[in-house]
Image 1 (cartoon, rainbow, N blue to C red):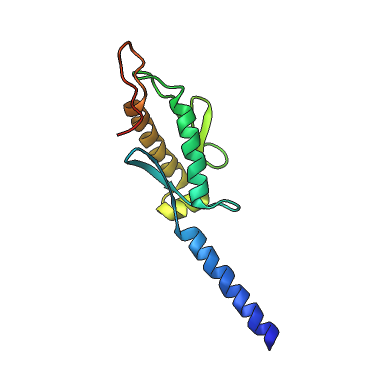
Image 2 (cartoon, one colour):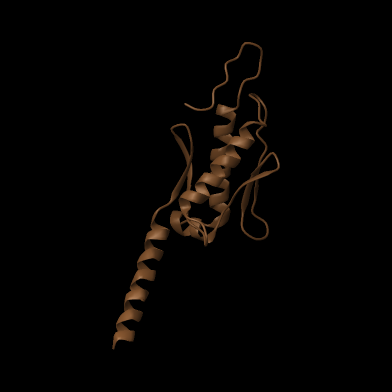
Length: 137
């Protein structure tokens, strides 16, 4: 009886942690502009995943200048869709992202790719003489 009770408690705890783990999306933003939200993946919370994407976004910003094409590439061919900028992988769209947004992987990749491209064009630093550098809103 005690073993059955312990098994039930463990099963409920696992189920609740899985729900909590999946319920909290991580937000990727620039300034006050939200680009997209990501879901958790095995071994990483959504917040940890979003933080990693944010760090890559900062690296990408250091390579882009005002007036240049940001070079956003959305690949939807084989495997999971990806979004890369200037050769840096920004994000891989997962099945959990698709479930969170109730969207097909290719459609979600194109949507996020467009948002990233548009935002990078707006926030790319102006390096012309006398220009002030701005990184967000």
